[in-house]
Length: 146
Image 1 (cartoon, rainbow, N blue to C red):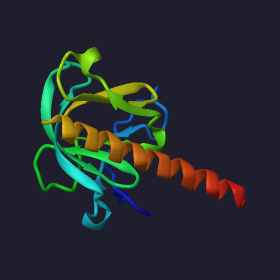
Image 2 (image 1 turned 90 degrees about the vertical axis):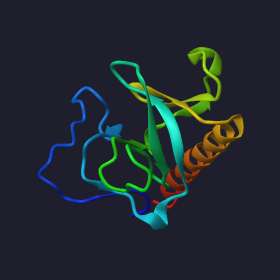
Image 3 (image 1 turned 180 degrees about the vertical axis):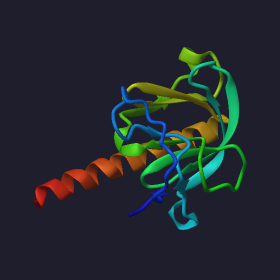
């Protein structure tokens, strides 16, 4: 298995029963292995309920986009978004009213993120998009051989 790996734990995953299974894993025992990291860096994300902007360290793996409170952390992300559930990643500057804003769309939730620079925003959008396409191609290819 590539990407973030989950260890068995007695702690609940806190996934809403109304959300599609596997959309977002929060407060779970998720461990990202250093070898699986494709891209990492600081982004500012909009919180789900209060809509406050919070600076987080983001780590992209082949399967997940994870956010952490501190740089270098690779355990227990504040959120872990499964790429296979994401439908779109694109610029959102006009929608959010902030420079270098982009969005990652998943069933039931849209994540709004801010990069430090326009180049950084484009790099994140491109890298996330390539991982989304790679996952789709891999799943479609696997289905052809069944």
